[in-house]
Image (cartoon, each protein chain N blue to C red):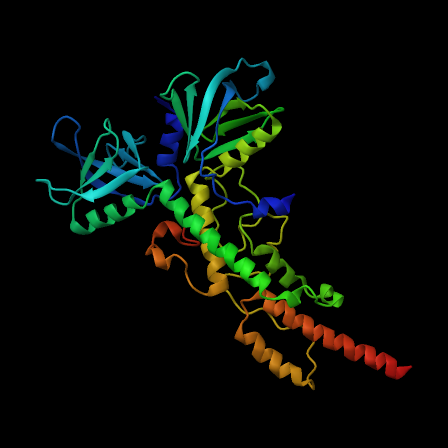
Length: 257
Length: 153
């Protein structure tokens, strides 16, 4: 079966970081002799090279639908990668120490695309549930006064950013900007221009206008510290404050007439 | 249009898209219009695109979908090209524009690296809301491959 070998070799040797790498002994197919090879795990592919400096891998094992287990072998620190199916081969490998063996078994058994997809689905579901939970939990949001709309756009931007995914797919699979600073995942034309330095979750800033005499000032400062991470809560909180300010202003206008 | 893209699931459908398409490997500059396309059954399985002759059970070959670019070509046509081989492209003709778009979306999300980035993104989003690392329950929060900011391209 043909494979785009150049692409495979490129993936094996390109700069993207490996998920594990090191020397392992690999038992030959027909003979039981072990050969020392340089192994590189990237994604769901286990590449092996003749030497660490080799420019191209000698072979690759695709880690889908396999089990990784310790095995009885004369060789110490041995483990096996087994595939189902009658024609499938079992790969027997041996590490150079207990720690190395454990590290490899762990990383290989979690390397499959299927495993990763399971975890991602689960996180996606969690995030979706949080988003829905937040939305249904504050029906008051919908009734926020129209003057709310003039509020600083930072909050609205954050609300926009809550759901699913990086907004724009990279031009090349696996080759997008690997800058994982939060907030950089969005495309340039969405709201990544939000508050800079947003490396850590921090409470949103208090609204700019503070009425020193108002008793609300103290309480809102305290309240904002309580639960800053619920955008909808803050949204409603600021909305109430704005409604109050607007009310005050209207009353003052009436008084002046 | 952007909004709906953002809300689309990142994940491949559970049933891998498969279909019979005209396929050809062409020089990058050649319009597909001029190519002779061979009928191939094409099947997406994790980050590989397998292709078969329509009457055979064993695939002729497979394309690893990492570090590749999916491009919309002419009507009903998309192509896959690889970074290290920019002078050639693999072209596929679909039955309809809609099918073509579905394939493009599926293939763009098919790489392991895309899945990894999505995981890191979701992890970060959840952590921002809850203050807790959602990967802890899986015992994989310490894995180097999922760390923020430690990887560079």
